Image 1 (cartoon, one colour):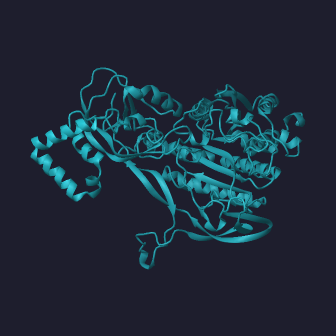
Image 2 (tube, one colour):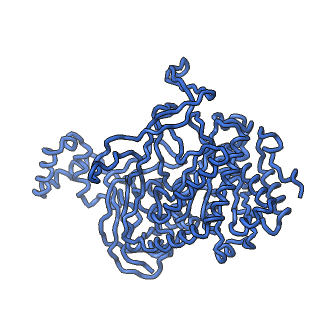
Length: 586
């Protein structure tokens, strides 16, 4: 074995540099050549610019295919590097960790019990957009890749809508290999402080409740292992509540499924958001990342079989979620502990609890450049910050899962079906003559579009409710049953008020645009006729003018009062096209 050919450019440059994609290809091939019985290197997709997306499967169990892993019940750890290519710690640490696992005879038994799926550079196009200042807040390497794809999309916002070829390839990889745990490797920004790394695990605040004990066990054991070897690790992402103001403290974020951290709980699997601290030097960051990967592999070796069985039980439980109330979005605050006698206050009496956080001394002074306050840290002077942490998780939005499932009209099937295919969500196409059925339709009473595009889309926030209506399903429509292991994901995709539903991401925005407008002079004539012909309507109009000052003052709302009651009104305006059904459609 030639150790030199297996070393990364980061190691060879004393952690001043990181390699390009040619290094990913070279090291992947070299690992497979050196340990052919234990390493499978394969292409799992192509980027928007046609670059190879590379995966490595490593195991000594004899299972180097997804079918073999399932048959032998081998727990799979997925190491995802380079979703943000400027944050190259995961790529370099991953190659080091795999080399050590494969080359260390004492690790042979570990690789007999587990498998590792390593994606060194998820965002391959961004990886090759190299620049000196692509990560200006980060201490090394000298040059890094770019955060977004060639289409300028942040992949860690694309897990649900799956707009990009990179994400669709990743989702197919996830669905094919079904990793038990995904470690998504990042580098954080933010304040300067002592901790080296943060580790946020799910399910712990969301997802299947029976997996949360194991999620906490995984997180706490991982932090304990890192602490033993001299690193400081946090159990939450240290995002300042107010930008650049350490005194504002932190708030725990329960990530929605647009992020990897929120996506895997929808699949009844574990995820670890790993964030090394950008202000630490590159060599230090790679070391802590390497130790995190190794520790996580060892934990899965020790507990993976049990965790895998619990995950499969969660799959079976998800098959029975029809009619269940399901949380869709969360907020974080802090509530006063229960008072004497077990009485819990019915309101938030404090926004946060105070923690002691190991930071550095700092000053905040007005800037002659921006005019605002600017924070300056003194990393030579450790300081305990007594700051608030908002870590009490509350459900902000929930919905009841349908008893049958969702029907996507044929007009939208061509767009929605490939996204469902990528996720691995089960669905069927409706064919043959059908009678009208009872279904539920969501009609928006208020629609708020984003003021600017976000990740290439104008997001929509809908207010409204589901109401029973008669519905005639068309041939070619999609039926998405709720009775499937990915039921949580199905609800998160199709409930219109969910934060990362297809509706929230603007896939149905045209349905909330009014296309036909009656000229005001025509509307006036029609309204006068309606008033004259319908005394009850006239009384309703007068009452609304008397009791609703906003309505009375708005010419447009007064005219719309009549137009909504006229035969010319578009009954599909503000109608969410997906229907809920309470029975299974074959």
